[in-house]
Amino acid sequence: MAMTGKDLPLGSTLPSFDLPVGGGEGRWRSADAAGKPLLVLFLCNHCPYVLHIAHKLGTLARTWQEQGLVVVGINANDPETYPEDAPERMPAEAKRAGYTFPYLFDASQEVAKAFHAVCTPDIFLFDAAGRLFYHGQFDSSRPKNTEPVTGADLDNAVQALLQHRAPPSQVTPCMGCSIKWRAGNASAD
Image (cartoon, rainbow, N blue to C red; front, side, top):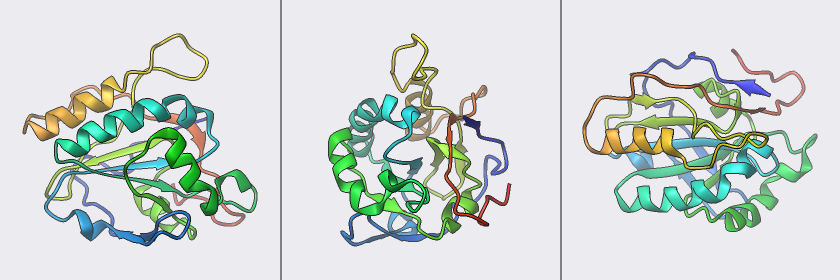
C-alpha cells in the first residue's frame, strides 16, 4: 500500500505527454485537452483499490465528461512482472469498468515520474489553464472498510473546478497499491 505525497504542488503545470491507448487503438496527447479542464487518473487492471472504485469511477467520469471535463486514465505498471496489467488487457478492463475515457499505457514510466505518481489510483485534476487544482483521494472507501463508494471527494473537487470555485481546503491523499516500477526504474520521488 502506498499513499501519495505532495511532490506536485497545487498550481503546478500539467506535464506534457503523448501515449498510446492500451490495446493499440491510437494515441492521446496532453495537448488534446488544451484550454479544457483535465482529470488524469493513474490506474491499472489488477489493483484492489482501483477495482473497488472502478464502476463508480466509470459512472462519474461519464457525467463529468458531459459537463465538459476531459478524463484520461494512465496505466504505468510493469507488465513484465504484472502481466495482468499488459496493454493488450486494458481494453477489456476499460469495458468491464465502464470507462468512456482513453486508457493509456506508459511503457517507459516517464509520464508517471513526471507526475510524481506513486500509487493506483493516483488522481490529478487540472484547470483549463493546465494548472493542478486537486491531487487527492476518490473518496474514503477502501477495499476492506465499510465506507460506501461514492467518489464524493473527487466529485466535490470536479464541481468546484467546473463552477469556478476554490479548490477543497482539506484534501486526503490518494491511497492504493504502489506503481509497479520496472527494475532500476523506481520513481524519482
